[in-house]
Amino acid sequence: GSCDVPRAPCATEPNQPICLHKNQIDVYQMEAELAVGPVFARHVGHRLYRGEYYSMQSDAHVSFTKGWDVDIISQQEATGDELAVLSTYLTDIVGSIDPQTGLSLRKTRPIMCNTEYEGGAQGKHLRHLSQPEGMPDIRGMPQLQPYWAAGYSFSRGHFVATVPYDLYQPMIFQGEEMSIGLRGFSIGYDFFAPENSVCFHSYAKGKNAAARNKVPHFWEHSDKFKGTGVAAMKRLLGIVNMNPEVERSEWNHAEETRYGLGGARKTSKFYELYGIDVRKKTTQRHLCQFVRGKMHNMFMAHLRSDGMGIDYSGINYKWVDPRPKDR
Image (tube, rainbow, N blue to C red; front, side, top):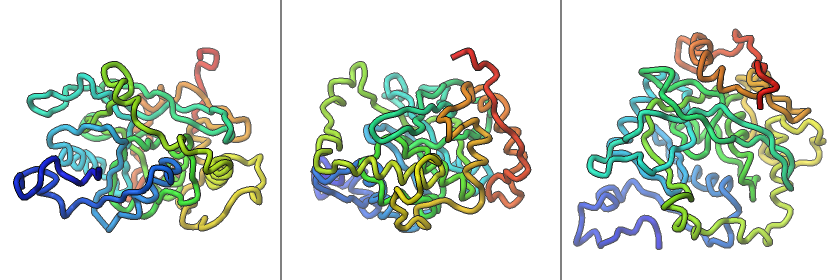
């Protein structure tokens, strides 16, 4: 059934949250066999945007804390950055929310700083790995980080309008996060780890494994869309200048202005800052050491006086792994 149908009719139980807020809920349903992956699904979701002041994206199977909306808005505004995007991989739900109060039991939070190249049928691309979780290094506001995560993202609504999911990337599962992150960076957005987690994910492990492993996946119908994922990955990587070995004529450039890069920053600056070599397909490891130690204070000193993002023109930095033999 549709996710906007209450467990009991609103006429008999009008105080159900879904009844009280029904005018604020939009739902789009489609046949499962037409599903072509999360990038296209989120593209459809972005098309439902109607100018709301804030925008949030999360994975399915997520539980929120009591008062999460007030909390995350407060964190967003604490950055002082109009172009701030709060984003993270979510902590497991087990042991995270007090069943009596609905409040978070966690004092730690993840931060996005760990990525690596991986291969596959669609070609080499960067995939975020598991992220470190610990006590916040910065207090009173979210902490600056290099990467964006699809599992949770909160920002001003203009992020959705300015960095929309690409219509031309069907059958993509890995790679979207670097695509959105780099496009956002080039337009001027800055990514932050929330200081406090406001929601938690039910992962397919432990006591939740049995239920989660029954959930259908979009690739069950992949035979209907053979070859589309390879072509989509060439476009995804091409737009963000991550596959210089591929001729530009080999990938689809349709609506590239709408789904492409901005003019505020160059992708080469991003790659230089965080030790990514798009030709050799390698990364400088142990970046988290810099992210958790110095990055926030060093880069936030260059936040523009009008709050319109960090000015990277005055930042000359290049991460180099201090422990290259320590894998």
